[in-house]
Amino acid sequence: MIFYGVLFTILVASGVNIQYYINSYVPDGCARIHNEFIEKQATKFTYADVKDCYKSFPFDKEVASKTIDTLTGLLGGFYSFLDKAKESPQPGFDFKAMDLIAELELFRNKSYTTLYDFTIDVGHLFNDLKDAHTNFKSNCFTTFAFYTNMTFYSVVDNGEQKIKVFNDTIDRSNIDCEVTHIDGQKAFQVISEYAKNSVYASRDLGVRFNIALDFTSTITSFAIRYEIPKKPDITYTLKCNNSNEFEVKRNWVAFSSHIFLNKFIDSKSYFDNICNPIKGNRQFISSNFKFQEITNIFNSANSLLAEQDQSVTRIAIVDDFIGFFKLEDFGVIKILTEYPAVLSDDTLDKVILGFKRLANTGVKKVVLDLSDNLGGYLFLILFFNLLLFPNTYPSFDFDTRISEQMRLAITEQFKLATRNNIFNMKVYVNATTHANFTSANDFFGNNVYTRGGVIGNYSNKYTVMDDILNEISQFILNLTTPVSWKPENYIILTNGLCGSACAFIAEHAVEFNNVTTVAVGGIAYNTSLSYSSFPGGSTVNSTQIFESLGKLGLLSNNLMPKPFPLTGMSITFPINEMYSKINPDEILEFAFRPAKFRLFYDEKNIRNISMLWSQAAALIGSK
Ligand SMILES: *[C@@H]1O[C@H](CO)[C@@H](O)[C@H](O)[C@H]1NC(C)=O
Ligand SMILES: *[C@@H]1O[C@H](CO)[C@@H](O)[C@H](O)[C@H]1NC(C)=O
Ligand SMILES: *[C@@H]1O[C@H](CO)[C@@H](O)[C@H](O)[C@H]1NC(C)=O
Ligand SMILES: *[C@@H]1O[C@H](CO)[C@@H](O)[C@H](O)[C@H]1NC(C)=O
Ligand SMILES: *[C@@H]1O[C@H](CO)[C@@H](O)[C@H](O)[C@H]1NC(C)=O
Ligand SMILES: *[C@@H]1O[C@H](CO)[C@@H](O)[C@H](O)[C@H]1NC(C)=O
Ligand SMILES: *[C@@H]1O[C@H](CO)[C@@H](O)[C@H](O)[C@H]1NC(C)=O
Ligand SMILES: *[C@@H]1O[C@H](CO)[C@@H](O)[C@H](O)[C@H]1NC(C)=O
Ligand SMILES: *[C@@H]1O[C@H](CO)[C@@H](O)[C@H](O)[C@H]1NC(C)=O
Ligand SMILES: *[C@@H]1O[C@H](CO)[C@@H](O)[C@H](O)[C@H]1NC(C)=O
Ligand SMILES: *[C@@H]1O[C@H](CO)[C@@H](O)[C@H](O)[C@H]1NC(C)=O
Ligand SMILES: CC(=O)N[C@H]1CO[C@H](CO)[C@@H](O)[C@@H]1O
Image (cartoon, rainbow, N blue to C red; front, side):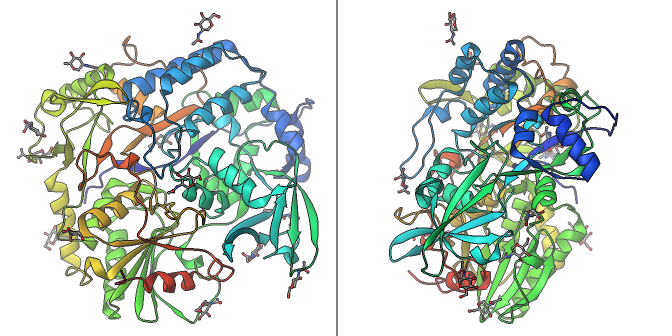
């Protein structure tokens, strides 16, 4: 099969460079890190070392100004939600409605001491949108992660929400103790504020609260961070076994891996090789990998079950992708990602075999666990939607905001038909007629909508080509008869961190098939919690945009943005919008969709996922 490369995901990448090594001493933070690395093979460093290294690059007004030019050019030209993001949130959502370009313009007059301060401040502006897809990053400041060797969870105890210690690799007797205070403030308050201000991967604050405590995902959490914490240490007040409270003071320790540590000897080489590497000399390493290197925690279907759990039968596992389990009288399908390392006919065969084996056990109820899932290929969305619900159409409708720049790029791509171009709209068809787009104007149409007070042009609605759907359906039919479960036999279980492609699958199950949903965790005093986040649209990064424009000969066109002043900088964002089926004028990214049912974590189900699965399965068929 041809695997359709459109991405619905948030893969954050960072740049590294070729190894080079000169034995000289420079008294700066980056050099101290290098020396520790060489002399002691250290991969853990002090707060002060990393802070001094990161803050060794002075603010440069010229770099800042060019960065703002590139950002406003890219967003103005290609960001699908530029105007939509100016509208205030629907009830249930919490984000800053803003004119992103106007806000960026304000940075031109701001002054900073260091490049770090500028970069982080601009990053925070993007984060205020609370959209995991829309990000500004510099590789310069993602080399280290900060950690205090403690992770947390939250329970609701007699109506009171508490924070507890999930794991403490320094003193295991602290595990399960209540954290009453963090730096003297109520722990629940501190985590909630962190979720509100610093977590950005959901527009739902309750989901952000879950993410703040999440230690399996690659997204910044309270316990594991990429930004320099405000101070070098943190004090937790613990209360264990109803005994007296006591304080544990921990230093933030900064972790990195050999891959990055081999790239520099001092701040100059750090800058040249990580912040601004020479083009062509860049390799990308996903932060997934980085995170695994740092904490050795990873998400694999095999490691979901803490120990050999007698209550669970493993039916089939396609590792790092999907697991099939049977418990009591129900089945569990755990999808970890739609971005498996290998996507081939063989992988899909194995997935289909898992479905078949689970069906053959005779289970009549299925929990579809989509927690901690950050998305992946459009191809796999279609595959899962056709496999699970062969009787409904597998896709939503899309459209694109047609700026002058977008119009030019799509028009040129129609003429030149270059390969692997993000402006290639011939992979889609008219959503009404399912006819191919034969010209750019066919695609553009003449829809005019007012969003955030701005009148804008939007393309005809489009969807996926029937040929692609038929091929996937045929592939499935070649291997199996349609699964026998009906939509009412499923329940979707998530912690709300079911993003992008995952959100697409969940929203499709709900909107097209009435599948019921249950969300776990969140903030207890809020009655509702989203089952998915950032459905967005397909996402691209700035590198892809510049490469695609390059193929069209548009890089030096006056309308188009100029590259970032530092090659380590990049942004990602969605380039199209996805519409609800039930409310055809509603953009899913901005639609608050709470789960029908709600569960909370407790001291047991936080460590024993099969208990959570049983709680979810018990809701199948209930009102
Ligand atoms: C941009 O996206 C491409 C394709 O997914 C990926 O290979 C590349 O690493 C990304 N680059 C950055 C800077 O994120
Ligand atoms: C920046 O400052 C200049 C001069 O002080 C002023 O004219 C301009 O309007 C300011 N720009 C913004 C975006 O605030
Ligand atoms: C706590 O962390 C240690 C060290 O990484 C690990 O061996 C142990 O399994 C973890 N405990 C729990 C309950 O996750
Ligand atoms: C803290 O955690 C890191 C990463 O898991 C580990 O390498 C280190 O040994 C831990 N420190 C202590 C003192 O246990
Ligand atoms: C709390 O009790 C458990 C067992 O009851 C024990 O293992 C643990 O060390 C105790 N924690 C503290 C801090 O006393
Ligand atoms: C998890 O909970 C189930 C159901 O209560 C129980 O049968 C099983 O033994 C538990 N597993 C572990 C590893 O504690
Ligand atoms: C595509 O669909 C729109 C309605 O969404 C319709 O107005 C338009 O004429 C169609 N274009 C073609 C080429 O079929
Ligand atoms: C539409 O385009 C695809 C490939 O771009 C082609 O395979 C298909 O035959 C076309 N369909 C029609 C009806 O022209
Ligand atoms: C919308 O498209 C029309 C026709 O191409 C053009 O004249 C107009 O300026 C566009 N409006 C906006 C807001 O881009
Ligand atoms: C399905 O099977 C038929 C007959 O074996 C084969 O020709 C066709 O290529 C297969 N289709 C897919 C999509 O695998
Ligand atoms: C879903 O449920 C609603 C109301 O309960 C009903 O109107 C609708 O037809 C159902 N849709 C499907 C696809 O079953
Ligand atoms: C869904 C919902 O009710 N969300 C609310 C949860 O609480 C915060 C803060 O009180 C509100 O901002 C949310 O709207």
